Length: 452
Image (cartoon, rainbow, N blue to C red; front, side):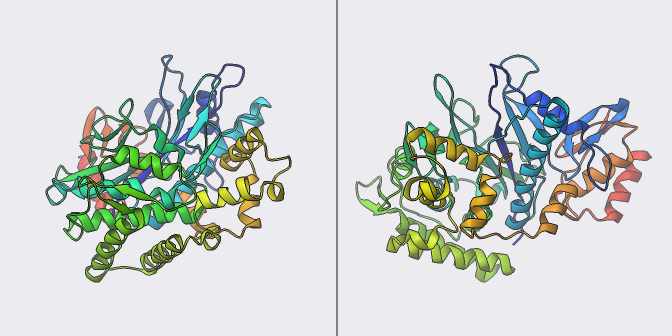
């Protein structure tokens, strides 16, 4: 099912001797020569300078600067993806790019700087958060005044999309939820909403970009795919009016936190009318909407798989059968290896500090712990090696990202800069508002317009 989407992953880079190495990692990535291509992963513009865009259509850049030009977060994004499976492949590709940056920096400097796909980290003085922002394109008029139908799902979805972790020594389903301060907000930083309504569609103004900001960077392929798939279907069903008049949660922010601190299950929520409802009962309303959607839309085997898995998970969570889910849901994987069987997977006595260190190792894409756990626990994987290789080296076919890369490579001597929805050549801005249908014929026509 075609639902345009993408993610931005905030990689945590630790301070070493009171210095952050995000700038150095980005420089190392720029200097790396990609296999087969023997060029930098970044697209080049005129005068030998680089853009922020990668050869697969995504971006890599530094974010949050307390000192001008010195960044605190390594952020790597996917390109625009037409469906959840592509998003899975390109999100895993961001891990490859972060690892390349770390490996290359170690090769040239002799110093290893790890990159962590983690939602909460504790500094010397306080906890802070890193996240994953999801973007979904919807038709503006069709989605108007429907955003509240999405809120209960965003509160509850952590029970199958949460990545698990520690906050003040306590294991949580989704530590990211402890930082949510608002339900809907225009700006992300400071407000920390469930969903941001910043009006930047990067497309035709008839569309709107929903930016979900309470997500977490998962390592397990199943969790990533199901997060993107089920969220996509629900947004599409709401857009089409197939999901409406859902029960309203009294305090969504508090409800998200109460679920997060309850890995034992039995999640109940208070509604605006004073009644209580089971979280799984609310998800059943969304399930009905997805089933209606599938009756009217063209679906493929991955869509069918996602729906089958969603039903399976809801049934097992209802039964309290976490054992059947420990090869799927990331927070349940961590519950198994960190809380229930620490000595089986790690050395040590399982002290609070050792569990936090082990969780960090699991989240470090520059450490082999996750790959070892994935093999030992036989975690579900969906990507083949060639799927990941393509996602690292090439953009999605016929997408705007494909056009962006091809046009930038042809016009690099004249290229001033590029963005998600435009290209600047010889100081003239040319808009690329359509996300789909960028075959070679359409690209040639667009190039001819620029050249003429």
